[in-house]
Image (cartoon, rainbow, N blue to C red; front, side, top):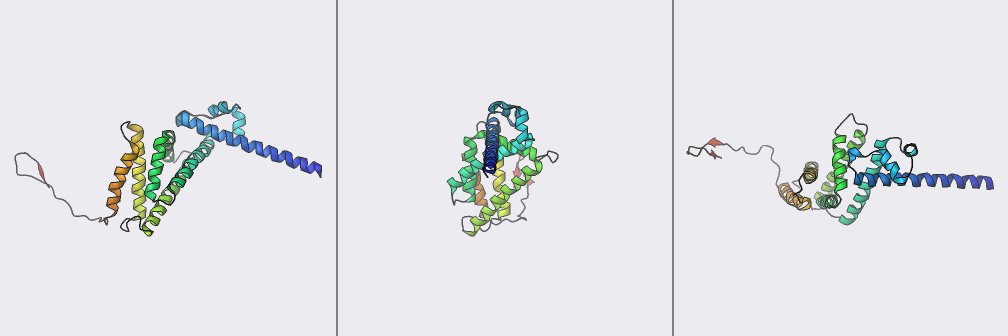
Length: 227
């Protein structure tokens, strides 16, 4: 009986040590990706940070891509938990704004997520299917949020949630990309301005066959357009 108890204790201790090391590896990968551009990060850099060999690291994470995904899930998941608590029962637009503000404060995560979008767009990349599935989940979350906003009166019924999600995510991602490339762009105010325009448009019913505007050359000497 005591022999079984001792064996069980040793097995539990070994499992706990393994879990602790895996947590350390993922945490060190998050730190590395915060400090080093995604395309420069390697498993050997993670191993060096926690004082183990690459071979030992690969016993727990045989694939570098898998380790990157684990790090992204922890990093972004922790951020999303904080943002969700902060927003509470706020609107979907408020949630996206909080994410934008968080990314502005922590641009390293924003850079990583933008870099992974290009990976997701490459069907031949081994982690593209997973990244695309996560992207679809994010889109679905925004769409469901807008559906709820319409149901409770926080968004106009003239806004179709499926299209609203497309437009809101387009603003979110497009402005983040600009912020990475333009040092003069203040991300959060830019998002606020764009969303104010977007929400105003949601209040109008969309008309696919809008009246056409005819443009003709004016008769004046200045060669201007009459519209």
